[in-house]
Image (cartoon, rainbow, N blue to C red; front, side, top):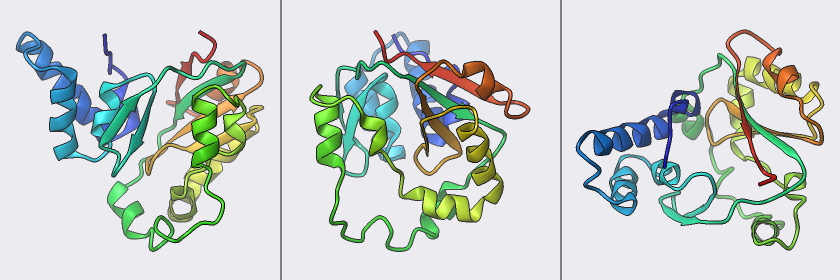
Amino acid sequence: QKHFSQSRYFGGSSDCASMLDALNDLFGKPLAVEHLASIGAELGSDVPFFFYLPSAVCTGRGEVVKPIVPIKIDKFMYVVKGEHQVSTKDAYANMGKVLTKEKKNSSFGYFRNSVFGRDTDFATFVHNDFELVVYDLYKDLAGFRKKLEMCGATKVWLTGSGSAHVVVSEADIEEELRSVGKNVFVKKIDLKQ
């Protein structure tokens, strides 16, 4: 069962998936998840991901989704969204060749090993190339990230090209994260199931 009630905090792609899911519900669920994901892929590259929550590996432009068993680790993870807004169009327009330049040290193999249980310290290698551009364009968002880090986080990274952050910590810092500003949304992700 999918619930996207907080989708507005995760950008236009989750909003799109939420609307498709709601319309499907309204009409008695005539479409399978795969069909909804296919429609979503035509509307936005990463829309299909939201039909395969909580965990999936996305390839291609983001439209090829493989559901996976959630990683079980002994850390705390949160998605945190402040009042900041980021234009995906502006982020991509300013990306230049950051996404396409050849990198000698790809972390995908390490990620794959983490996902399939051979290593659980995934937070040490995760990064988001969009941070180079987004934090330059939105200095206040970079400041928000620093506040999240000061709450005791071991790792913080930007989600996609948007303004939400993933926060990983050794201890439960949910209350500290909620106190970093007004109208801060914090969603705890259970990694210990």
